[in-house]
Length: 399
Ligand code: DI6
Ligand code: FE
Image 1 (cartoon, rainbow, N blue to C red):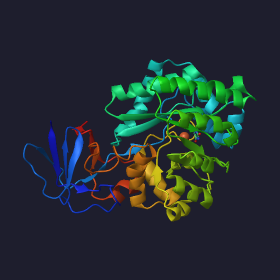
Image 2 (cartoon, helix red, strand yellow):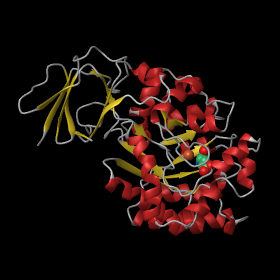
Image 3 (tube, protein in one colour):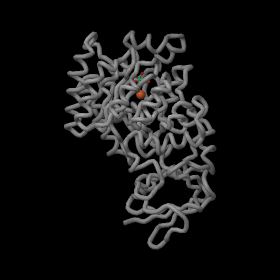
Image 4 (cartoon, rainbow, N blue to C red):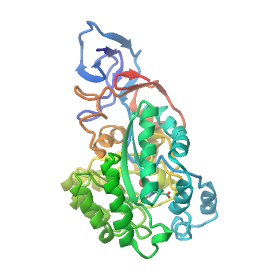
């Protein structure tokens, strides 16, 4: 088994609080067979390949815990319409938005979806990302939703990355079910979920709870089914308005609630009680030029862990940079630098139920590490459009 010892790095472990990065070499990391076996000072060198990190910052490899990375088509035209003053909800109601991406996605086979998605994935990997969550939600029929997840799984074969798939059939109501949300949830969201689960295609279940999408009452049977199948649930909630999705999902023990611009202090307390991670998505906030930021102070006070993700999607967040997500988390939501770093490492892993697998530098976890050509986490978060990645280490291998 290959043993590797990384030495002379400024290591931020994200394991039990994040500091500013100690002196180079104070913490060494030893991995064997792809897993971290020891973290500390003066680790044994016998039989190990020793990598001198030359004083660089080492962090856990980032985790992008909320993406819609697999989709067809392009919505730059809608961006122009919004520049002209059209609202996102207006465009959605007129058949654009998610439904425009649905039409493009339905026309594509698995191979075409993979080909369209790979450049987006490669952008994330170039910033050191080890793990990407990918949602369905642009197929909106059983077969097209399954194909999205099949494409997502294929990406994991084509690249050294960990993919987690999420069933998001309850993203929008397709035209053939107009006025019949209950039928759609039963025939597509639930029936398709059973099939996806039987094929081993799904790791979690998500939905879009919003006035332009689904209500908690409509979503209830889907969440019951998810729990019956033993699948963790999450939710897009309180993004554009307060629809009650957060408290609803907390009742189902959600691993995460995402967006949360309009969440309240009571929502934060419900999330704390259910162990739900707040996944903040500043890319969508920025693109839609929202003005109400998520209640970060309430999350801090209630002790809700906060994650940051790209929300990479063709409409509201065409973002494929986890570094930019950190910068925006700081500038737009006023997260501290340590919160930003925890947001894309330990807390992001937790939002995917992967806290015991990745996102921290600790013995027993996968050796998923990022080495950066900077010395402090603040230097990582402060710059815009600059990628200082020196090396990405996935399961102990530099890739
Ligand atoms: N909220 C979002 O911001 C994305 N999905 C969601 O539920 C937007 C998806 C899109 O506009 O394509
Ligand atoms: Fe999203």
